Length: 143
Image 1: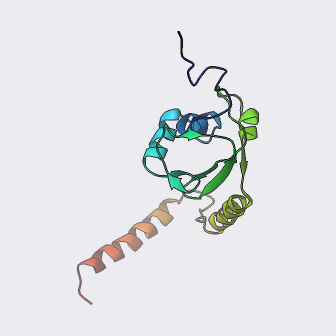
Image 2 (image 1 turned 60 degrees about the horizontal axis):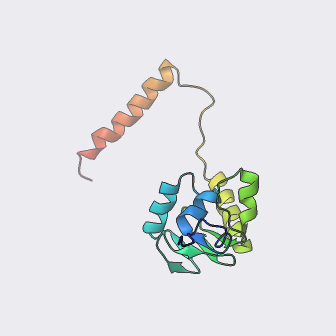
Image 3 (image 1 turned 30 degrees about the vertical axis):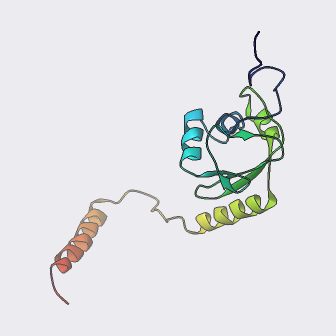
């Protein structure tokens, strides 16, 4: 007698492993990266730290902690990784998460470094070297 496994149609769409769902939903590029993120505690299910083998089901709230936190609600489960258009239908990002990402994006735009329009010429390079040397000579001196 063969027992049904998680991949069989009996269990299809009910629940699946968290690391696999993160990969299928294209929230991580590889399944290994998803597994490592869950193991390190950067992925939460319903505000609880979990393991990669934890079964996720529709309605769960998955939070990914990175530079910017992302909270998504699981809408649907799929067994295969498809195109990005299909992956976007597997989850719904919360409004709070969307607002936080936009705020962080606006802050990062305002703090971008200003780069010169061209490379320094010989005169500019010599001025940069003199400037750097003036700080190097000040390091050894006491105030």
